[in-house]
Image (cartoon, rainbow, N blue to C red; front, side, top):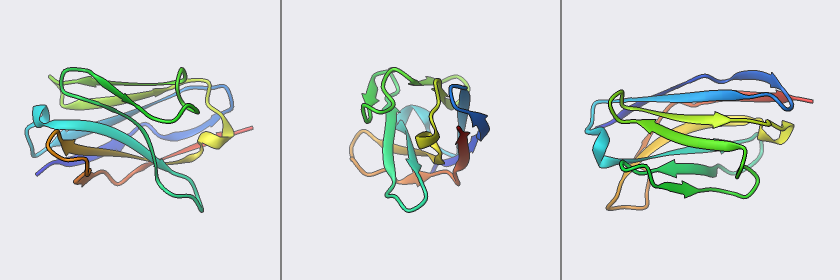
Length: 119
């Protein structure tokens, strides 16, 4: 059973960058597709992006394409979300999640890390 811990959130001005990291433990990292989600106040949770063991990327909404990049370091059991050109509407609690390739449901979730973008 995987445990996920996010880090790297914070407050940044619009146009700035942040890099979120998710460290996985307690499971076989190679079994998991790793994803990032976000939830803004008063809104539903939104899929941002995901990445398979081999590095294939599952893209999320157009609003983050070209600005957010997901990557993973399999040797370190870590997945990274690099966020550039941040906008106030990117403000949300960002979650790391994991699922196997045999399901579409993310079974494992981190506690979330807050990203706040000021204008």
